[in-house]
Amino acid sequence: MNASEIFDPAVYARLSSELGGADVAEMLKGFLADTQGKLDRLGANPLDRDMTKREAHAMKCSAATFGFLEMSLIAWELDATAKDMEPAEFSRATEDLNRSFARVRNLSREILSTQNEGAPL
Image 1 (cartoon, rainbow, N blue to C red):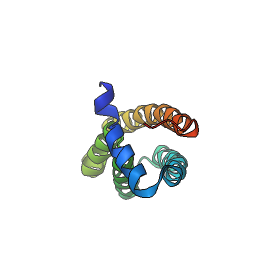
Image 2 (tube, one colour; image 1 turned 90 degrees about the vertical axis):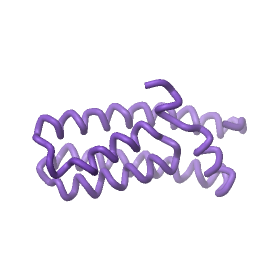
Image 3 (cartoon, helix red, strand yellow; image 1 turned 120 degrees about the horizontal axis):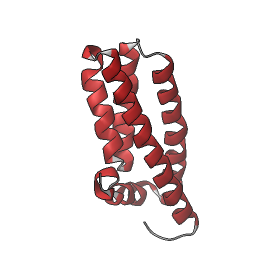
Image 4 (cartoon, rainbow, N blue to C red; image 1 turned 135 degrees about the horizontal axis):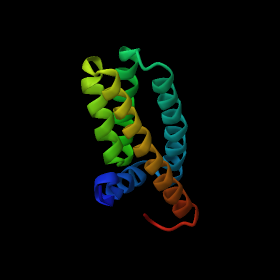
């Protein structure tokens, strides 16, 4: 995936202009911590498909809020298909989601450091 398929900075910039950069930065930090917890729960409870749907749905929405398009799409697919997935498919999907979240964490560090320097996105 290219950068524009992973992250849409215009979405983040619009959110920042509506809520203020400092507030959105705090929300982003909360998103990162919360999402890691959701991924940990998915890994610990692979047979709980109802929980998987809830967590994937929440990740889909929150990732989209910040402009993390790839992660939102992967979470959407997991939300839509979790109940019918075979264990191997579920494992691949959660691995994809974890890889995407690793990219999101790296992008978030860049975003937060840029905001701390006072530079616009």
